[in-house]
Image 1 (tube, one colour):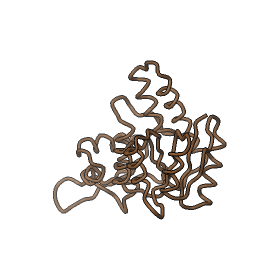
Image 2 (cartoon, helix red, strand yellow):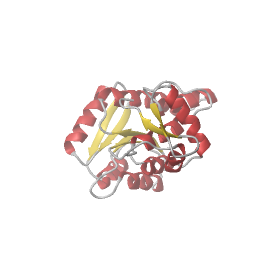
Image 3 (cartoon, rainbow, N blue to C red):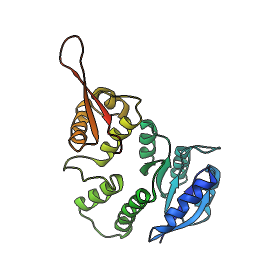
Length: 225
């Protein structure tokens, strides 16, 4: 069984998320916590394989918890479950080892898909045997893009997620350059992923005409994607 610590400052939300986790075969709720201090104490006192970690808490935020876990030498996996949509938070969570970032509100089906992808990855990494590069890429890709159509060869699920977060967190249409700056990538990389997401219907392209020259391409995340 994969032991899960569910962390959220809202007791009702914690209970709902814990109920979701309990419904997924192979997962068990090890504990619930409502603060950063309680979360760290839980990891110190019992086995925890995975943390569903809220970002906003009364004492310290979720990113601080992740940094402290790594400083203490804990290799516990983390999926951020939060309403924070800013790309900077996503990037910081990834840098400190968070495997996934799930934005509230989400459904049981959405969380279940992420957990099932995590279980496959966990089984492979904990098996101690050898894995082909393609298998590892597929498992990490499944975790980041669980429930999403497969990406073509040469495209990173992590990069696609950063572009998605930049668009979903925007107040209006963005240019490729603005998305690149927000997501911390080159303009060429942003354009490549934007073209892919537009072809699959997840991004909408509009043209903004100036007084002279070619129209500027502006992008928005498609509603319902």
